[in-house]
Length: 600
Image (cartoon, rainbow, N blue to C red; front, side, top):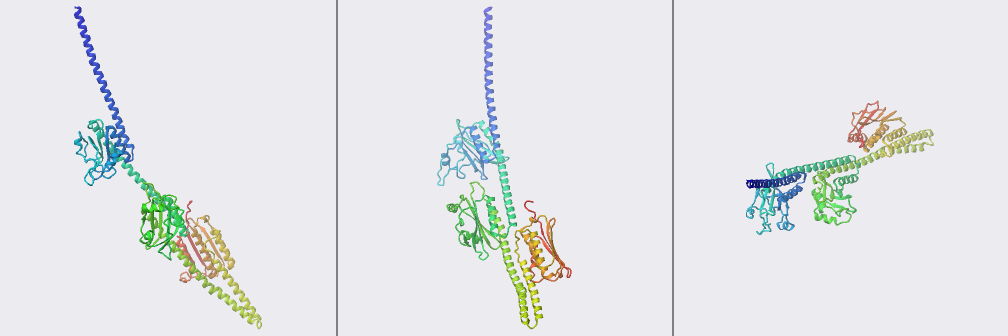
């Protein structure tokens, strides 16, 4: 009885041990399974983080490089190709390689267009063995003679297209899984997921690149407009000196466009087919960088550009020759010759040179051409003004000569006759002699006044160290001293410094001409000169109480002074009004616009 109980007890113990063993085994297996699942979860989270980090790459090239690395390392593949597909099926527009040695890349001619191909499929492809790999052409290694260059030994392929929305934009091709004969189901899942992430990331990078390009173009446009605006201001404020204006223009273009040097050739009105160097900037050579200081139309490279009105961009070989010359501060990578054209001739040439690193944007040729076509009419207008000034000087000389001949010389000749008559009658008729001498003295005094009037009219157009108000007050004082006619000058001007040089000269000349005409013709007893500043203009008023004249009668052809008054004021955006009634004097009112200063 006791023995049987003991046997039963042993059996129970054995059963319990067996149950515990089974339970322990299951626990251990469960722990192993949980550990594998936990490790798998960690890897997936790490992979997902790598995919999310793709969105930090805003450069397409950098992004493709990162996709290559993720694909190759997570699938443990030997070779990897990733690129963007072109419109031609089965071809890349750009691609990158991973895992290939430099020797393999050279043997594949991978730097040549279409050396590497993409599989023309919209589905994920996985091969199981080397024979299946032969169905797909990845390396375009056929030579012109029909032979083939080096091709890697491909044992397995995993291919995944990259889509954004419904458009295929690229692909990932993996080859030869290390340590296995083919890629696994997990590899397929990973690469499929990576391709999905890549499609969105590539599209984002493209959008960013397009936005950056648009922003760069907008900035460039704003900079170009700022340059044109500054050139416009400079042109408006020019002093009429063409060489000085061209120097300022060249300085502004070089500094704003990041250029190194510039030269300008201009023709002359006497010889329009010959161009002379007038300005050089950016090199120490006393002559032109191209070796010529005078160019004839049609001769050589520059003469051909002038004759044909053609822009010319220097080639690299020509630049090498120029860079070997002394006097350059920096080697040139860019040099352009631009004609300066009008509607019927080329006035000159502008040569611009610079140094731009690879990838840096050179100045836009059309923008440069727009600048020189803007400069051309300005030069033409300045030359016309100079011609008019020369003609005006000649006409003024002629007028003065005629006035001196018909007035002063005739008067002096008359005085001479009076004195000669007095000499002849001195002994026979002393009283008549005395009368003749008195008349001669009066005539001589009158001639002296005329000469003083001429001197007053011949004062230089440009004002000296005086400002305009001081100069016009002096004109009034001189008028009184020469004519003995009272002349009252008043002014109400606060910003005389805001008058431009042209405005100063115009007001001065109108005041001078008006007083001279009063002295010659008005027989006035008093004169008032008033200069006033209003809200938007300056006004000069000259009033006399002389004999006046009929304003309806046409002026004589020799009345240059009044004609000049009108042309000067209207040429500066103002006007002049001359009102007169016979027997009631004359009033001249001239005005010019108030131009705000740059500080304002």
